[in-house]
Amino acid sequence: MDKPKIMLAIPMYHTVEAGFMMSLLELLSSDYPLQVAVEVGTLIYMARTRLAKKAIEGGFDYILWLDSDMIFPADTVKKLVDKAVENDYDYISGIYFARALPTAPVICKEIKVDEDENGLLSAKATRYFDYPRDSFFEIAGGGFGCCLTKVSMIKDLAQQFGMSPFNPIPGLSEDYSFNVRATEAGYKMWCDSTIKCGHVGAMVYTEDTYLRQQDQ
Image (cartoon, rainbow, N blue to C red):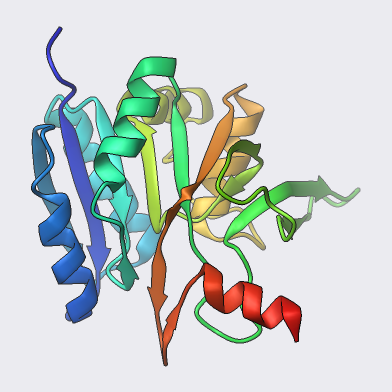
């Protein structure tokens, strides 16, 4: 059986963190065939849409979404792709945390969108604060800072909704908007919390940062 073809999709502004570049170089040593694609200096939902289009046109099987302010374990590609291929998963995220204090995991237990009698939308995302540590579990969605998706899933969502699945729903970011559409279309989303990523801000925010905060 041929190995799946994977695109590393990186939306970024004009500079990247040194830690990101160092961890990216480690990812590139994977046994899987990888190709890096970058979108620079545009709105994030447009960048993700353009990267998704490149993956579709390039005949890729999976997209590994990587944000340029993140730091990843060296075995991220192997763990995510092995699990996705073996179990036919469409979406798996690693675990990372907001880059501000108090920090919080960027995964959700629930993302809810309501429409009032005037057709106005309101949205609420409930973070998964008590997530299972070092486990594999279902989520309502999460950020795309370290996230593997099947290209076929993205094509299907675009066809079902008649638009880019990243088009923002009022009150939600582009990644949570993707999550809402994926749930509506019947897809399941998962998190592997053994894949612990750092989020670079004034400091590097990690699971240890979150756990120390909980103890205070």
